[in-house]
Amino acid sequence: MNRENDLRRSVERGDPVFGASAATFSPAAVETFGALGLDFVWLDFEHAGPSPYDSTVFEDLTRAAEAADIELFVRLPSGDPPLVRKVLDAGVRTVLIPRVETAAEVREAVAAARFAVDGEPADRGIGVGRGSTWGADFADHAAREDAETFVGVMIENETAVENLDEILDVSGLGFAFLGPADLSVSVGHPMQKDHPEVEALVERAETAIAASDVSLAGIHNDPDAIREAVDDGYRIVRMGGELSAARQVLSDRLDAIDR
Image 1 (cartoon, helix red, strand yellow):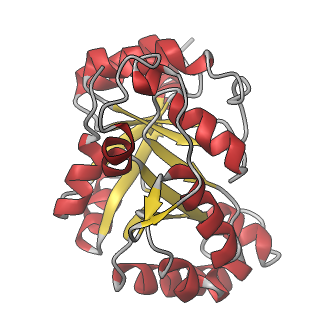
Image 2 (cartoon, one colour; image 1 turned 180 degrees about the vertical axis):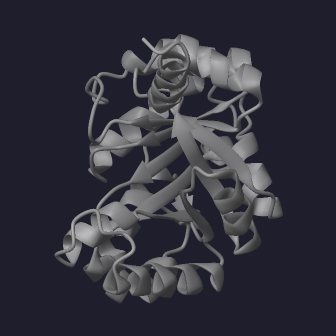
């Protein structure tokens, strides 16, 4: 099993990484994205897919990721510590915690993902799963896992932005992913991402994250917007997915044949 989280290494060097969502949760999509040269596959277990509490779900997905040299980027339904530990023990290394509002919530999720934080024992335990080759490889397991696990949080409501400085100070937090769509909902302007109130929240969050030791992440689909985001300090960029790409390509082809 590949032990290194190349996505974390790239981001910590300051290099941007790019990925796309696999809404089908298909190992074939994971392999295809890897063959394209993407850095990560976004798997959204908050809004869709099978239960992440069933660790067998990740067996074929992690194998496909290793075969294609790409990282799984797993958005969990919550920061529930037992769920965080279970998913990591299944071999996932990059997890995204949604809908956080306070530093205390982030601190709890980070502690569940790590064996130690700042030299002090944290809340992850030794588990027999794919992450430890089913218990066959416990030598340096704790230190190795802490070196590779990458934990991020979604910043997607007004309360999180208000508490952002405290959130960004949580030791062990690797990245913060902005969610303008849910930010728009939280201030009463659903899907009006260009509303001045929403834009002000996004700009405020971008400025705070870019000035911290936490990496800035977000969604940008247009190539010009992606380049601008990277210039503005984004280090993790999700750009589309397999279903949206298929919809666009096939729609264009249908239009081209005047069906």
